[in-house]
Image (cartoon, rainbow, N blue to C red; front, side):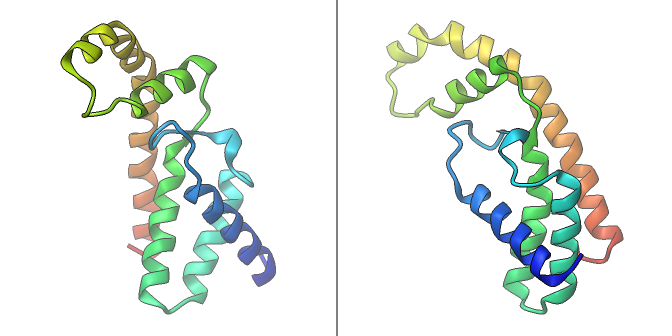
Length: 133
């Protein structure tokens, strides 16, 4: 992959990471600017190009953050949105009132959260194997 393509993909992916998806950490894979494989290749190439420690840290974190992007159903997106918008400033009465929705949201989102956690472990292993973690 040439440097120009690496830069384009890494910058586009970085912009997506900066967006507030409204779903907390979990995000829909459809919001990625390229395939996970292309982004992984671009980030690994960028890690090989840069010597700046802060940039390397950000690139490595971005690599592992690819796990946050999962294929999500509409129900999973809605559940993640509900959970992301819970607030510690809500009163007990407000939390109790929405307890059923919160509970069902956790049940719906848990499989996607497990996929995310499993993939993060794999991605971290890939970084280590490539000598970048």
